[in-house]
Amino acid sequence: GDSVTQMEGPVTLSEEAFLTINCTYTATGYPSLFWYVQYPGEGLQLLLKATKADDKGSNKGFEATYRKETTSFHLEKGSVQVSDSAVYFCALLSNFGNEKLTFGTGTRLTIIP
Amino acid sequence: ETGVTQSPTHLIKTRGQQVTLRCSSQSGHNTVSWYQQALGQGPQFIFQYYREEENGRGNFPPRFSGLQFPNYSSELNVNALELDDSALYLCASSLEQRGFGTGELFFGEVSWLTLL
Image (tube, rainbow over all chains, first blue to last red; front, side, top):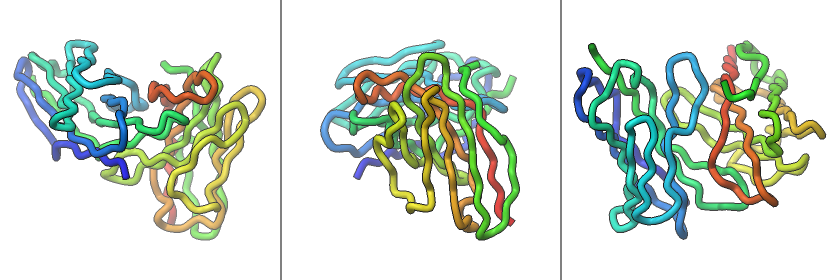
């Protein structure tokens, strides 16, 4: 079955540091890949997505590239801010007949001023 | 703000009881999905409703049931509650074209269910 493996957290970085959160997946066919983010006290929200191999999703300075050869979708940001502190979830959609997303376990990110 | 609202946001139950959670979808959306998130885990898909019909179900027993109303709001019902049902419950709405999923979900606030 489908699965998503995320980098174990929590991750603590200083402001302006470079961020990488690793995500690898197992899926049948050609899934779409997503990063969702949950800020403190808020619901999950879509951060970025990629629908086919070599696509790069980007939003709010975050980027992730769909790598089919390594089955990965790592999240990166060049210079993190305190406001980026949140829990980040990698997810995939492989059955396009519905919205059954398969999520990773989440990575808690804390940015220190 | 996503326009998706859930209620109640916190509730405490005991084993064997029943619970109903409600979700109003974002205006213009025709699909509601329900997820369960246990402590330290990612959300797990329970089921989805598209235009009032169940359209996909995860690995949850039949005591998890739901429905969707003509205004596309939805309910999640859980009967015969068990201790393992203690979790966050997430509702998400989306706009599907002829039941084709996009993965672009709009989540509301969560419902915290605690079993004593």
